[in-house]
Length: 180
Image (tube, rainbow, N blue to C red; front, side, top):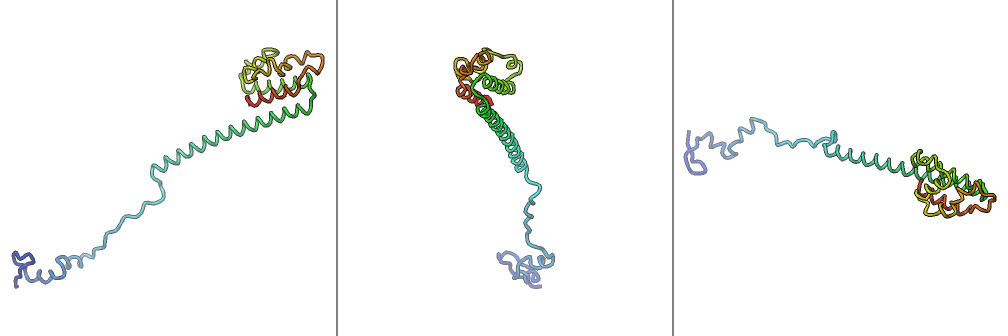
């Protein structure tokens, strides 16, 4: 066995190790172990999503549900308003200005008021108390002193000329738009 000096120049290296030094110090060991290269982990799968995605899905679902409910309520209110205004137009076409028109408009307004305000507050109202309620809830001065006054006076008026039909219908339309 012959000794050689290692690369650093310090000490001696046995001859059998010196032969392997040309190919690298670990070449025989690596060939014997059959090692493979480094493997990266697999990409995470699509399912199950991370907790942040669950939270985002819950928030989006809540927003969609609340938006849907608000949209549904708005659509129902719009549809109800459209039906009420169509009924008011039907009254305009069917009835002449007179006590019958005033009674029909009063009944329509009472029906809407009963659906919107407490029954105990609206149901017993007649005459000036009914007109005061209409003023308080959006009459803009059209019922106490304006053409809406016919709702209280028309049933007792001897002639149809006492009722201002277009004015009464305009006041009723304005009140319906505010309260439906």
